[in-house]
Image (tube, rainbow, N blue to C red; front, side, top):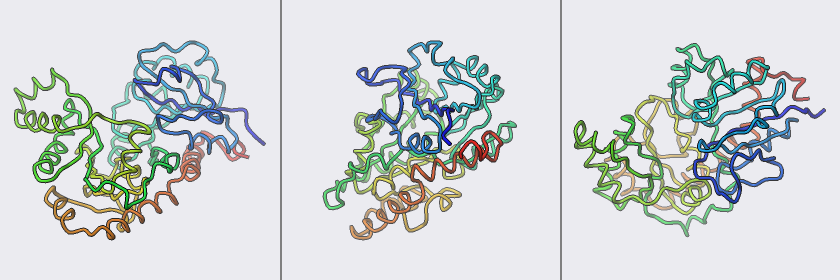
Length: 351
């Protein structure tokens, strides 16, 4: 028996393709998001009997009442946007008070204490973050909610045709001190190898603050920025991973545990991932599917000694593991298992 209840996922894009429109509730069964996270998880959710939708949120646009009034008892609102929560807390609180199930996904840690009466559960990707949320008396569980690499498999280039130049495709936020270790690591690599960098713009006021408080960090950041390429998102981001042999990953220093969803994005696109050692990393991926480092010098050593065939085999192991264990079907099942464990849905809902 199929349900009439719906699963609505809110995703946040400030620069949405205007041809696709802002703030449209999109039926994922008939829509292809070619620029973002892909709909494969939502499609799997729909197979469980829920009508599945994706809501593209832009904080510069208003949400009309039709969106809020479309929810009914036992519908699920899955919020993948901190900005959406902060700006629309009142409306979300009203939904929860009418027995709408509200779930937050956040791949980093944010203190939601002031908003915790508006949602049922936070999902994150780090044991460290889970402990922090639980210390705030917030229900929290682990869900490795990766981008849907399976939706971009056509972008995976044959290994022998890939670029050998190592790349770092993450962000650098100079307004966040947890990125400072990342700046140090990338700066050391920049001085030794031809590293492809891809991150966003600088912020004038923050650079001025760094000049006063952290002049060394400011100097390193500016040199990195001058070498960086324009940031890429969505399909362009996955296309960049899919055409490179080596991607270097670095976690933020606010977590002791492996938490960066990029580790699944990289391996899921059949690239060799070189990532920093973190607790719990082997709960996510097996040892033979990645290269671990403890310092920039170790990265350089690996780049010097690894043979192409060895890199290919490690990348192949990672790709297969992600494909087998983090498919949309597996992720949808994990999500529904969590919701059932909290009594938010039951077996009858999924009949």
